[in-house]
Length: 445
Image (tube, rainbow, N blue to C red):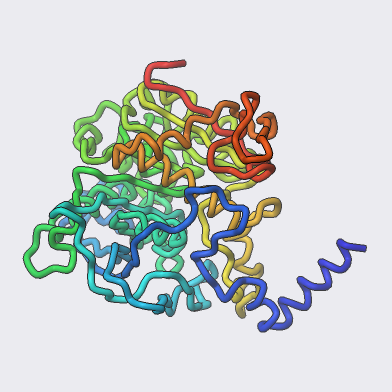
């Protein structure tokens, strides 16, 4: 009876935009559920947002490369969305207009906390804010993880999310361009933002401490982040058929000089959400052993794109020379934690497409806002520990029991915890169910 009623409600919501609008909280990306863990809540800073364009000059044009010929070069343009601590704007909140959905046709308006072009707020005592770079999947766009970008900006980070050329909903090209360019884009944006922070008159001038950078990647963004973190790819990966001349991925081959040059000590921590590639043989133990940057892997145990046991979990077990963590959403698929809640317009199909964009954002088991809040909590703890050096935030990673369903919540009537209490720090009773957090220190097997 309940299932029938729910099915009727969903059908009615799809048919009635007003009902669907209410159900989606007006396309908000800043939802914090009442049962969210402690560190998911927004920080003390009001935030602003601006759109920038940067150009990486004289890059190999992967899409126009031809076998047996010297590949042409071009100036690679990237659009960034940059969030930053801002001067208070009263009751104003932000809107992101014209955001393209997965179908490549439908434009929507998202709503959040950031105010467009707000005046930046300088860090206290003449300091600067750490940088976080956000890298989407294939395809995706710079708004796909905007819930996390806004959240971190309120906590004193400058966050730059990339529109990766040849890899967005608007310009999706051959897969080979994404394979080659993803880590190159990530490092170029790090350098570009660092340069802008030193440019007199730019709104980022004096705002960014690029020597303290975190990198967050989802799916193919996670793939790029693993390479950027130090893991060169295998010879089998170089031979992978990606619709471009074979051998182009050799620039990231493990042990090559070109891959070694990607190493950047300014990157203090990496969050790789559902990183693609391990299940296709893109890395081996030798390559993964070169990762020394602390890394948090996030995955759904039923990831049908990147794989779990032979995919993300295998990455975690193979990363032996870094502090590493694996946060698992039990029974979640590839959409675990990263995408924003499905915009109301995604519930319907645009003309000429065969399925609604909804499936690109949602998980059949987990509520997206709940997963977003959990991701915000652990990203805050992880980046806090390794980028900001905050031991108190890092303590939220030290769960006494790996599988939350095995943890015991034991409290006295006055709220003090009993000796047998083993529930995860920051989670109210019953609210960590379905999660597993594993961790190993550098050098531990």
